[in-house]
Image (tube, rainbow, N blue to C red; front, top):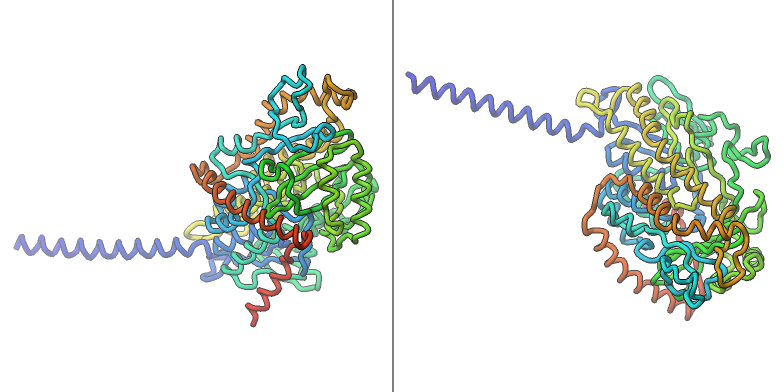
Length: 562
């Protein structure tokens, strides 16, 4: 009898264990699908996210949210992509963020990437560089008493050293069309036809169950969240901050739609050219009286240059490709001739680049930015701003696109944090609180980077000049003496602290040996593709045009509909 009772108890325990196992499996399955469920606790319903703007920030936000299972639609104004400057810099902090979003996305980007930070990047004397493209030691002080020691390199940026400190991939560039094509493909794999071209967002109305998104053609769509990623001339921000019509001139006759004119306009061009330091130098900033000139390796044998000038807004000499226009051959010729006149007496290295630039690649853009929003939230009900829509910044630190990438990742993580088993995404109130929390989390870091970016331009133009030297009279202005005295502080204190701050956000943590392996793969590819382009140009002449991203988007859309 005792044996039978024991056997019965064992049987009951086994049945209970099987029931517990089934319950555990059910809970695990529920946890697996939880990210796709949404507020309102309706089974099968997903969080509806409308994103205004199909630029880099908007597409990365779309991809990150699609991965979470949200129902995302991007509404993009243009049906034809026009790029300004072509390549976009992705710094170490943003590369870490991209890897945290998705491993495959990161790998695809790195295959199209051009690394700059493993080579010399820094500030060069625009008057004393002699055209030999030498890699002189910036820390060699013997130039002060030995006139045979060159002093053409002023400062070298510690990009590699600061990335190594955190174990991060090295800063570099990727063509916008390449980046956006990758993002388009990745998003389409998660939701076919996720992007609506020629459908700009012009307004919104918050209500108890979400937000009504208003499109330019009068169409209205319902969403749980509207993300304003529609760039510096944002229609979403215009309504949120009551700024009036998009891009409208302010009463001061200089600012537009709450964005201040920085005081600078930039001319840019691109050429395929094998400079003497092409494989040794990532990018260099030539400084001189009242202006600076930048050249950068952007991959495949190409050099991109920028000329930053302090000019009144509207001093138009070339077209802005962001406005969908291209400079004519005569406009390009006139700009190049004019720039050569402005840089009279500068290094032959500057003139060599200008003389070998296809004239129709030349473009111009007035630079606008915004003061940080210390006291106004980036969100209004179920609507939130990100990227250039709320924190456009000067390009000097190369962090504009990087901060949009960080925005996309942190916004997605913040929304995901309100999910629970009983209410997988959270109530409308929880969503609104999450958007406010996103603003409070991001604002301090973005404000610091934005202010640093603006300060860099002001210092180079207004406080820097050709450094003083005891061997010539090229730098005798008070600013020349100041520039000379700044050198050790910049090299050993300011720039190391600056880049450590920029790279301090890295959600992946250290990547160990991966950054060095990526560089080894890139170096072999870089030499091969660059040499092929140099040979092609020798035989066929120069060409700098890139693919049209939004044309590709339409082609994919047609295939999906076919």
